[in-house]
Length: 267
Image 1 (cartoon, rainbow, N blue to C red):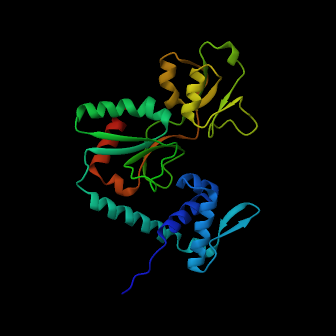
Image 2 (cartoon, rainbow, N blue to C red; image 1 turned 135 degrees about the vertical axis):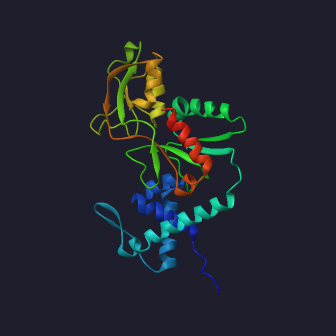
Image 3 (cartoon, rainbow, N blue to C red; image 1 turned 180 degrees about the vertical axis):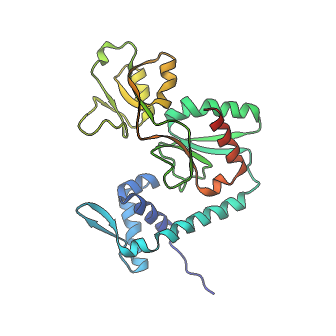
């Protein structure tokens, strides 16, 4: 029987757009332009002969047709990943590909990976700096996300949801200046004097004496203990913390479980 050729790239774009309900956010996740996302969605709609999204005053919404096959599609992607993992079973058991934000990679993850590697000299790591590592664009074993929970993938929490406001140790010129980054929870009414792209960049800016920043305590604690920054407020409980996340097929790999157990034991 002749099989139908499926537009897999367009389906992956559709899945991302459906999760975010935003072509722009889907484009960021897939490392393409919003225009490319829109082009793929239109091509998929032409292929299917139906409309998948509608624009409203509140933003992007899925149509009934768009919602109809979404669960089966995502299950299909997981089956694809399981098939690939099955083909890779028994191979590269000493290789790990991990995505993590730069700040937590340097301050928390790297020292623990070095200790893990010291006990297992044959282990090799490929570390990828990602604020929000995307498993669809890279063959990752594991990732660290700053989130309220593991979200669409299973995960293990590796830090408490504690946040702290820190400032430079000795920088009079930075008094009253704030360093802002996406997700710092300050609110839109508190415009920062200095805007950076990530929590790690915010920490580096504080250390450099540029101003104060609100950060996850797990990220800032090393600099606090070393006396490189001072605490202005907190720690106080927040909503987000750091999580180890991976799709279900990765969690079934013994090597991933061994590394996760080691990292959890080090907390």
